[in-house]
Image (cartoon, rainbow, N blue to C red):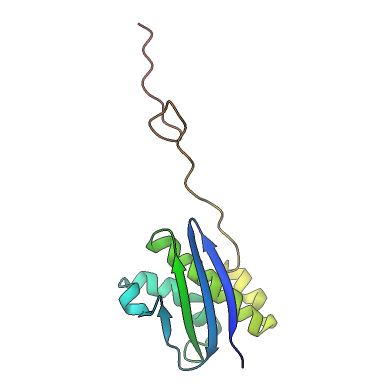
Length: 128
């Protein structure tokens, strides 16, 4: 099997994934997943598509991650892995789509407007 690549995005994060056959090693920005995401919850989020299909020990994953915070990065990575798995086997698409791994979550921070302290908050109005 040749190298499969895919991209995933969430908030301001972009994850580029390169999938090859291997032993289940996940390398993110030249670091191991346990070093890059010390939180067990974030590691679980990243591995969800692999666990759902039962192929955790089958592929080596090399990742370039940039932008955003750790939550957005982990969810962008989950999406990229799911897209790469669909490229390998198109029959898995329905199972991954039903779990919501292939859906782009487009929610992002709303921009701050001028003359206001935040995006929606206004300064207190004083009549006099």
